[in-house]
Image 1: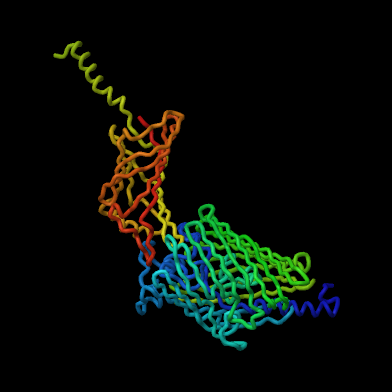
Image 2 (image 1 turned 30 degrees about the horizontal axis):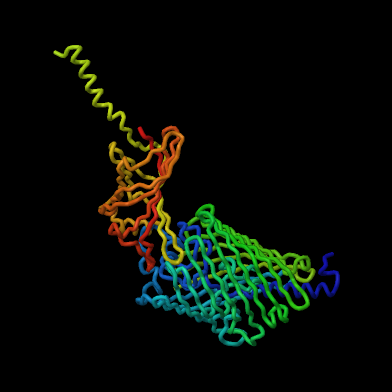
Length: 406
Length: 184
């Protein structure tokens, strides 16, 4: 007889755990694209800054990033020479109107069908408009000004501009910055942007992103940051002033987050991240809390067809009365047998309180196809077994996404 | 009619004429694979690595030439290669040639190695300019393994640094070549 059936209290815990797992799966929401596996190409794309307005990757593309995406991301049908020019397919809205040089424009629309099967609750089906963002950046000489605004049908609370349970306006980034140094190697910026930490993967609900609160969906914070990008090195350090799109102030975290990554050999990088933040009322503990996350990450592409991504982070949540040490990590293999077609296998783990609750596991099997200019489809089958207060609950989720960018 | 004495004198004369030729060894590339690499840096951390394996070595006894067919160079990106060839105008100037006076080169003895700097002239994009290059040479049983390095400011040869989608590589490119030659 299993523990769930042995006592009434255990059954309540089991139900709670099942609900938690289901909720975790259901909070899947929008994502800004960032393809860390691009390092498989040409040896030139270890860094992110040449393709993204955010020097550490994600969201708004530079013109170079747009062209490269068209050239290297998608499947071509029929005859296509490798040396063919990208043409208007690399432009905003396929070049429907000219965009002046100082201006970058972009947008993402991503929708999701989600079928969730908790182990001890009825299955659910949902359709979510995860992302409908417009992004823009103005570059005048050394000056950069960047903003995004959009709509989500649900989720993305941390990025919300409006209140209410559903139908929110969101803004994930607003910042101004200045580039300087040889080859624009430095960018100093202030405003709201992604937290520089770990692998900026598209799968923003991986525990390595959610538990460290460094996902690209809604974990952006306001602050000041200095980014550094030269061949084989990239780094960013951010002073976190808090997320001023949440209130009251007690919930806002203050501290720092940083990463550094170096390409030690051709298509093999190793990086380190560190985050320390304090809030007067932590969203998990409800108490004044110091939150730590420190870890290593690596990217390795032994051949163009395969990229391996690894991240491991140590966690510490410290209040006046207790300290919880934890661990989270992920390993992902991205196989691209033919340009534009990706098969991914991901394993993840989470131990929120070492030696207390047990270890949570997750397995992902995914396929993504960049089937047309500015368009990709993706299917994920996610199984998670989560340890919750001496018991365990699992859920399986099937996700089908469509993504268009323009 | 040529007598034996005449024949002897003729053979002696021919041999005497040939002796300097025999004494003047020439560099000949062996069949070992050669390597040509270049690195171009750009803004925001971009680094373009180019490579090739076609290279020929010529030696007329007074001048050594190293010729690289530019069409053979690749950056593993077809479109970028096309832009590179357009910038270099490879259809018009298919080769780059480094010319060095043999007397300016040092040759290591068998079992020895050395590093040195030498002057030369680089023909590229229809322009010839003096250059300085450094090289390491190691003599293993008569096979001289040579690795040379040279910075090239492409604008000095009239080349506009290739630019794509508002990102241009730096005008300074580092060129590395490696080959094995025998001094025969």
